[in-house]
Amino acid sequence: MIACQRQEVHHYRKEIYKCRRSVRYFVDTYGHIYYAAASAWVPFRLWQAQIHALKTMEASRLTVILKARQLGLTSLALGFALWLMLFHPAATVLIFSRREEEAVDLLKVRLRGLYERLPAWLKVQAFVTDNDHEWHWSNGSRVLVFPSTGGDSYSATLILVDEADLVPNLAKLLSSVKPIIDGGGRMILVSRVDKARPRSPFKRLYAAASKKQTPWQTLFLPWFARPDRDAVWYESQKADLLHRTGSLDELHAQYPATDVQAMLPAAHNKRIAAEWLDQCYQEQSPLTCLRAGAPALPDLEVYALPRPGGLYVIGVDSAEGNPTSDDSALTVLDRKTGEEVAALAGKFQPSTLAAHADALGAWYNDAPVLVERNNHGHAVLLWLRDHSRLRRLLGHDRQEGWLSNTQGKNLLYDATADALRDRETIVHSFATFTQLAGIEGSSLRAPEGEADDRADAFALACQSCRMLKGLSPIVDCGTDVTSLLPPLLDD
Image (cartoon, rainbow, N blue to C red; front, side, top):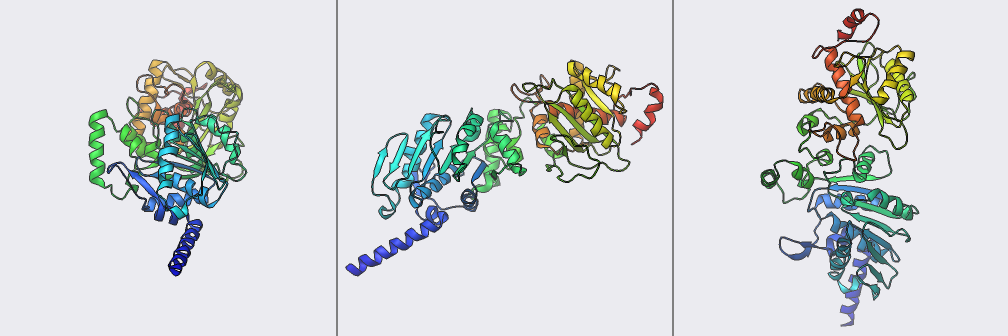
């Protein structure tokens, strides 16, 4: 009898050691997950995608996870939190969700459900506090849950933000709580996408992290990360959602195949079809090493260096330039291929924007410019007229610059949509891509609260390319207009 007890104790010690060494072993061997289809808790047997996600959570201090629905990622993150609390005593875990009842559910139902299904020899001796918002254990570990506010008065081992893209004030939340883990804790953001907010804080963070511009580690899990889903299942979901909603927006939000598909704004009532943008989008990080002679411009993104003898155009969208105004933007396209070779956006005064356009245009072989002619565009044009040798293109009204009235906006985005449909252009910038995808069909502007400066600059450059190729009328600006036309049309 004593020998059996000793053998049993030895086995428990070995298992505790294995669990402490490997969070994967702990979750895969002793974890459970609630399976809604069977209305029951079942053993958490990890899929390959979940194993990779768990490794990423453990290896990275800052993790942002974009996912399809029903992949068990929230339960996986809770399993990681439970492992920390058990095997790294005095761990403090903060859990945030968009609403209080959802935050409480994560603690009282899902995390508690994981814990209660552990064998007795893995559990703690007692609870110090056990209520809807705090669970404090005798080993010093505790977990606290909040809606999308509060929590900044604690030092945290782990912060988990569930459905992060659906949290309305995520930027404020991150500013408040991230400093409390900067001493060595971890933060995990898990979410499907909210198609209604194409430039949400979550998407901006994911996009920047994807380009290695921040210390965050990205992870994307598509609909097929779940082994029991196949093409037949996907087509069934697609047919159902298409018939119920009339578009594929909901499918791409709930069950995306790629992160680009997930990050696209809702295509319903948009000017540019999502499939046209998809076929022209080639994501590329800006070049990090520019040769001598490149203009030293703040936030300049260069995707291709100027080719000797190459022909280019610049679209210029100007704004007021103060801290609360929209961004001003420049886009440079290769006239032969339509490729986006450079982009620039920021809070630039009109004269500063004009100087940047002049420097960029000179570098790209004296590229002609098409400036949106609005209140601030007049100041840009005046500066270029007085200080620049770049040729200034005329618009649809045969005057210098492009007048963005109703007719001008329609012509501008007709040309851009045609170029994308016919694969006459290539988009590299994710910001340009998302702004183009968000342009509303009725107003030809961005949705309320979103930006369209890069989209407008790109559209102006697209229009210039088509004009200079003879696909629409072109008149240049200068003392001798006739003498300027031949080289402009020579591609």
